[in-house]
Image (cartoon, rainbow, N blue to C red; front, side, top):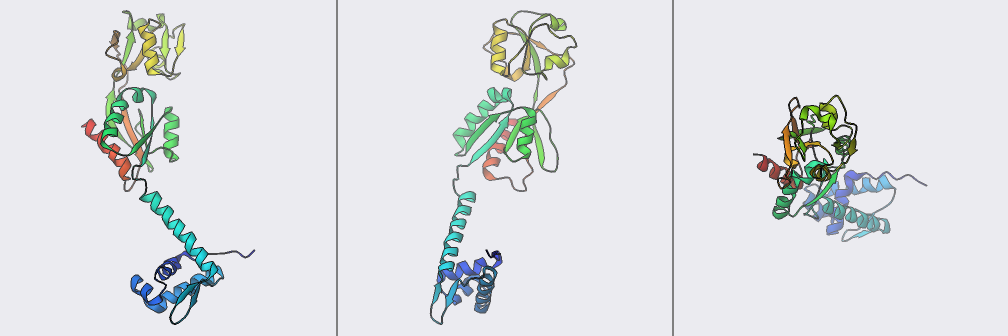
Length: 273
């Protein structure tokens, strides 16, 4: 089978000539000489080894191969139009930590849905997975506790996240090892803040469930203060020695951020200010 090496540089002359079925009209449209149009189509034909247009003094006709090429190029142009200009209500792919989704980002989604036709696809993931999937182009935006700055990704600091210790009954925070721990993961702040571990540890990767368990007196937990349900009667303890933590919005370093992504970023910036 003969290898085909289509010379894409000359497709424009072919497409315009097909549109008008006239070399002189095509030359006017492209603002080049008629001989240049004819020459470009000849070079295109040479690149594929097939005649695409039958020339005459009065009429231009497409060969079978020319007609087939025209239809495929038109399909391709329609596809490009759909990718870049179709479906104006585009989907923004968001990756987020679980606690942020259950609390702060809920209000963001409500406001965004009332102001924009764009759609949101939101997925909860671990910090490492969020960063990896953003690097791989699987997310448009991620919300994490990490400030990522690099050639491909940059972050915007949104707000400080204050961690607090919560319990149903009054406790001695300095003796946290004496109470059951309800933790989110092996990287939970209880492990980081206290050298001695509790004899009873329950791992639950849901901030909402953690609070419900604390409310029922199952154990104690460390959670972001903005996640604490004000309607739940809990004892809240501020933590000394806990490093400050900030929530960041991270995205790829677009030269020109797509409009649908920028619309969400702008809304968040306004809420931040």
